[in-house]
Length: 526
Image 1 (tube, rainbow, N blue to C red):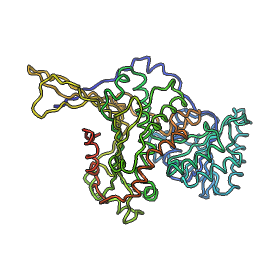
Image 2 (cartoon, rainbow, N blue to C red):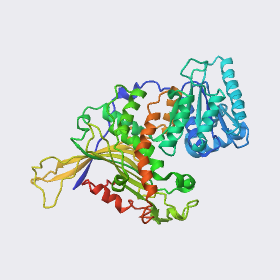
Image 3 (cartoon, rainbow, N blue to C red):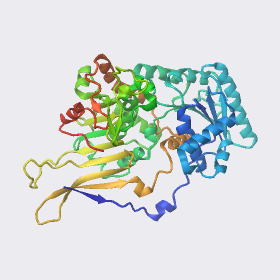
Image 4 (cartoon, rainbow, N blue to C red):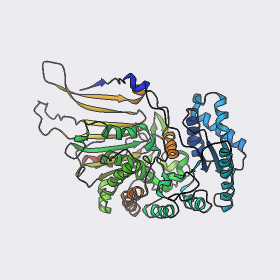
């Protein structure tokens, strides 16, 4: 028997009436390399426009888009206006707001493999800086966003350094700062990530590099830190003595769509595990940092990844499951299988689902399995972290034959229904002693309303302020690859049997249920 308890959120008036002024990004020129691409249109420009409209950008701020497409400033502004309108809808506001933003928007056409492009680009950036200073503006920093395919990262980083556009700033310079934002994936393997890190470290200081993972900009992900370290009630039980296992799920109902070319090379492990899911695991398992400062937080996260038990090929066979979706139905509508998607090889062995059992070999988590799973074309879209606590060591209350007391579960819903819930046992009002499972639920939407800012907006402001708390350090990137590389290597050596092995719209392959059952557990339905 299950009942639901609603938990209204009561904020004191002082909490809503006397909040500190919102932080604004530092004055800068933001150069988007790959500005004619999908990421710029769908995410970056809408996020920047919304930040400006909300007063979160400095007055001295310009955007210079760089791309192969031949167009002028006005054509670029028109293209970006259409993109922002599609993304933001009614949030676009009055036309004058866009015009104010468009005045900060310029475009430079060029080939990023050509050194002359960077020389011309430097002239334009310096002209924008000089124009700002002539108006009495403060010195500007430079923010370079690599909205590019990973295959051109190395060339672009070298050219930015050689041209003087992004000088190494571990020594004083006329620029207040120069930072580079690199999208995932950072490398295709441990070896390639190490090679890219060597390029980065040879030409830039670590504090100049912001490896972005949009998952970490979500309020619900940051709330995990607040929940753990701003409340004393749960931290004493956040260990092997009280937690049976942890489940981290990232399920999608969509297929690969237009990303099939990328997905055929990446697969689900590179796409979701090496970055998103391992970052969620690190936040869940990390020790309390000495302060909420970027290096303190990132150091504790990296310690978790370094403590992950390496997997032998034999262990991969026991502790990792892969799958590929076949035909099925989503929301009652038939959908095709992965092998029928456009630009997918007819006999592709690319996994679209994976479930992995991982172990953190440290004092706090010894013996507690972490189950990570992610898949496309699943029965529902949901990302969550579920902490399942141990059963009471002795149950004094009577139970029916075959009945088993459910475990207490604390679940953090990352998306789409952001919030958290806690289930526990209560007595049913009656003469007899009967128990029922109650679910105490908190919803972000009900408590605070819809989030005012997207994850990209949060991370972009952090880049401008130089706050790297939510970004991944070079050693953490390599540590994450050390976790997933053995899985990828074992799977490449051993072709999967029977792909496709789960229907679109299902919960995934049956082997994943067997994997978690060996630890006396079942997958939770988010």
